Image 1 (spheres, rainbow, N blue to C red):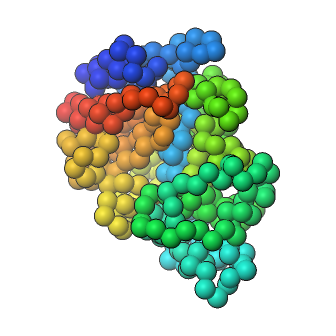
Image 2: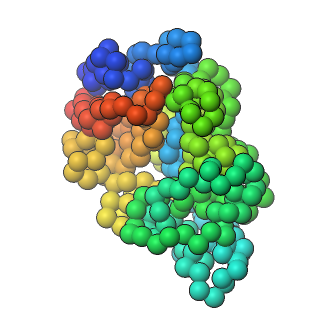
Image 3: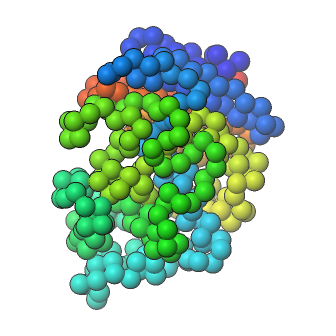
Amino acid sequence: MIDRAFASAAAAVAAGRIPGATLGIVWADGRRAIRTAGMAALVPEPEILTEDHWFDLASLTKVIATTRIILTLADQGRLDLDRPLTDAIPDLRQYDVASAAERRLTFRDCLAHRTFLPAVEPIYTYGGDPDRLRAFVLQREWRHGQMVYSDINFILLGIAIERLTGAPLSAWPLGDGLGYGPPSGPAVATEACTWRGRVMKGEVHDENCFALGGATGHAGLFGTVAGVLDFAAGLLDGSGVTSTMMAAIRTPLRDHRTCGWEKSFKGWHGGDVCSAETIGHTGFTGTGLWVDFDAGVAWTLLTNRVHPTRHRETGILELRRATGEAVSQL
């Protein structure tokens, strides 16, 4: 049955559009299925992809780690989602306490990407000291713009978690098959990075995350297909979330944005066949996770579409949509 859902990914691998792909599906009754094809690496040495390989999950970090941690801390009464970030980061824009707009941003604003902050900024070009770059993020007067999906929102949330817990993000237990790098098993290669002068393999692909120390709120998480499916199963059966956390990730706050996640809409990466009660998220390296609560099914499509370079067309949007629609019709 899963072979039908994996057909588009297998075809993309065979055609050379992506090096490798893994599809994992979990149902609410506990059944699982996994298929893998292609290569974990093409250069500098070829390596066949297996179920045991760890993928750089990229922005899936935002939902599997950061959103989960923030909502857990809120459940524990250690933060109020509708209070400003300054409750955790009092030195945010500390030289402009009276009028800095950044000081009025709330945890919920950042989770739902309903801020004025830019989508991304080349933070790694401003220096090489992680602590100094964190200080730069906190004291920078960010340019204002329309509400967009923003890495900066989650970099700030990651710093807030570190302040509230007194520990790095990597100290938070996320479960087997999930963790910040370097991973404990074989790793999937991502890009041949011109800035770092090597193929990224077992090191985080995202330049800003790398420069900030490798574990941030927006990126840095690695995972196996089994680790991602375990997380998804905890959402499907409710064992990984409380009722208030579940409501937060399923309730739209701005257009299709919930706390951390996207909710299904026409044309999105999850395809148009899933139910209206589906949430999902993608990662730049070629990863994605979708959870359909009405149908009782979740699926993750993990690829290394940026290997050996991001600067080519891989058809990842069409592949994700085709896969999601096939899964929804199993």
